[in-house]
Length: 332
Picture: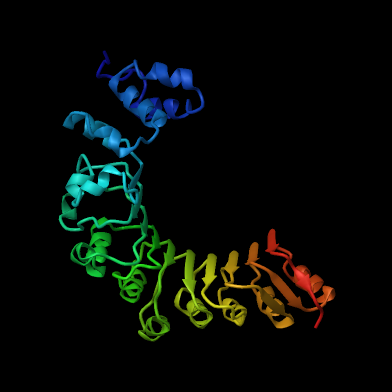
């Protein structure tokens, strides 16, 4: 049985630092569990490995809350026809308890609707990241009742401040990607965004001319768009350090626009089909003096000489990773 008092001869902060320094000493950490309640809680936090949420179901409410307070990552998978969660329609039925004090990462995969109402009862004070995969092409009426763009935005508002969002709704026919993009552009705490969605060219133009700063602190972006939209993107998200673009067409006339991203350190461009780089493309890319990683796929052809490529590599002395899939140099 644990004593409720820590060692009276050492400041509590120092005792916690000692336990933190035992992270790689499993034997000592296990022994710390039996010293006192304070040491036990600290050691248990280090030893803890997140468990499936289903494992909490049979426990008493007090035990459910005890373990829920230790969970840092939560995976809700509603994509499996055999999954028990498919029987549930509300947040209250999905989760065994309402408070997850250490939860920082929430992963949701959905093929069937979850009712987004009554989310106010949940308490995720440490939540920083949400990954949402909505895998529905032909929604049933229950989707339109339980899932709307307004309800999803309301959920994000309830869970703010979020630092990272990963949204895969590319084939979803319910959520309005344009409305969602406008909302996301105004989240001041958002630092990382992955957005696989179908939005229109006019939405980026709207963000550009509205006069308000967009994506103020966004430094990492992964996005699916057309080459026409890619040209506008750097003027909308100006502080990017890492950019991954999945192009929905085969045009390569985009690199001149990326030259506007002066802070860019990592650039990955995935074309729909093979692409040919020109000497001008190399010149545009060489203006990115802070670039450390460059990846272009699938197949890359080059209408330039080996000398042009050599000059490019000389200009890009800070480049640490260069990945040009199946590079073919054909000359000018």
